[in-house]
Length: 121
Image (cartoon, rainbow, N blue to C red; front, side):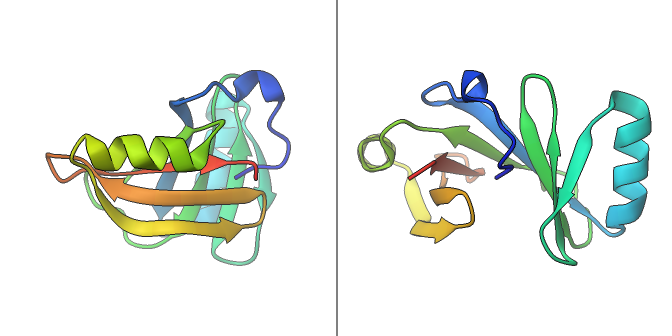
């Protein structure tokens, strides 16, 4: 996730990050910079993160598909949130893993939608 996030955006178990798929990252950056004044930070050739006032997000290289946005929630306690997801009937599809900026896991809800939850540690 973006390193420039302010702590005021990190609200426990609320949507904090949206991840889009784009076939052209430069085109996406130009469009969203012009449209919404988002700032971008590149993390290699296949990922760029953006900063918005109330939510952050990113774009990864791929073929856009309707419904392909990955909704990412923030947690103060990743293990506790993971346990709550499992108890509620969610299916873990990517168990807790580290990435630059923190850790996260991904799950499918009861309708099959995939979401992620991340923490700074």
